[in-house]
Image 1 (cartoon, rainbow over the protein chains, first blue to last red):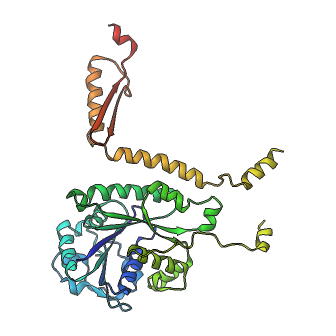
Image 2: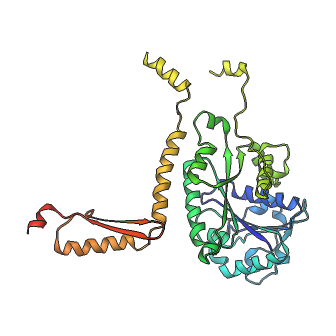
Image 3: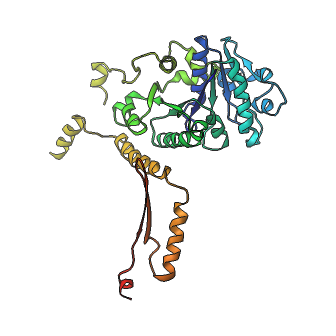
Length: 269
Length: 91
């Protein structure tokens, strides 16, 4: 039985694909058979973030349309043997993903995988609805910024009303908050919403706080999920995310601004 | 003197910067969004049609009819509030 996890947000550019790549790699490195699916039809990007863009032959839509079988389309990760990537289709036909088709692919993955990560496109249109429809768990990626928080709340409403679990009156989707692009120094100066502020508004189980970090851009430049960068703050914060998702207790890190020495405080201006 | 007071006030940690404004605005907005979420989708149309019926008989403003919907634990309350102009009561 595979657990289906959707990485969603409503708003674009908040770090969904970065998070999907990190979550998938983190789970796979712990020995779980993991598949990560790009649902962003027409704007395929997960392959780039995972560094397998030149190995794409068939895609998600090909499998749904019966033009390829699932094993032909799945790309095995070169760094981790338990991880497979299913790229999005670059077609401009936004309806390439049908609910039945997505259901069939997930059902097939269900037989031999432990986790399926669904990387949702931005927005609340068809692709985003398909990505979350079959989910068991949802990670809502949010930036500490007004439009992102609002869109996340809207997405929570959609998860609670339009998902299969909601429509079939099953146990609701387990929802988690992931706060990304966090800048502790700006929070300390009162210029950015803090963890507690966002928590107070969204009231979700917090998985991790990912600091705004150059290492995230370095990782995507190179096509390596940032969770593999064990030295970096963002990589460690993502490792914490995976651990907490699996039920391990870990104290939150990277919430405080770096302590400035007396010298720099005196001369701050 | 006032400037000096302000200086101490902000140094004491009173909220400054734009984050507190962001939080306040979000709290109001999200509460509003959530209230709208549980509402049946027919409400706006219902409101319009009720207004149209009333206007057949009485001249009222477009905002004279308000429909509110509240969900309690075991039941829902649909409340209609119609404000008639003062002169209409006498005729």
